Length: 173
Image 1 (spheres, rainbow, N blue to C red):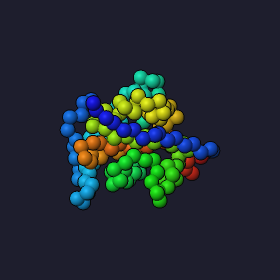
Image 2 (image 1 turned 180 degrees about the vertical axis):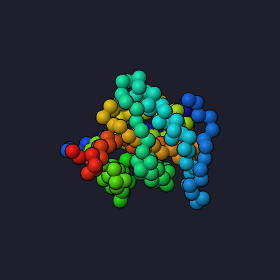
Image 3 (image 1 turned 90 degrees about the vertical axis):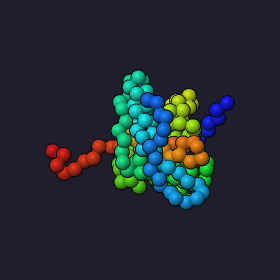
Image 4 (image 1 turned 120 degrees about the vertical axis):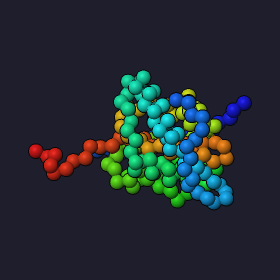
């Protein structure tokens, strides 16, 4: 029996393909725990999400580099502690954490999981109603995904956001 673990999903609002082998990038050479970033798995997770969003009638997400960096920082904490969590001691809550990217956001959500592969993590998230809601929420227009291998399982962080359009002096009448 294959066991998997999903963290709870988190959403906050403020008003106004087959994956057989990871493509590793070594992030830490520390003896315990070691982890490998899998950029191909991040792209696979985005493709799977956008495929399901299209089927549900939602627009695709675009991957934002700043949100991906925030997701990777959180994924490193999960791997370091070998546990799933949306907020570790001393870490800001999700909205302030994602606003640190400098993006103008008014709604954010997060899924965390670990499993034996990116595809299995994605399918497990889709089977969980709150995680599925985050993945298919039509109000989200951008995302940052992280995927790290440690102890033969992949840790996944999916940060979702609604990014507000930027207004510049040249765009004003």
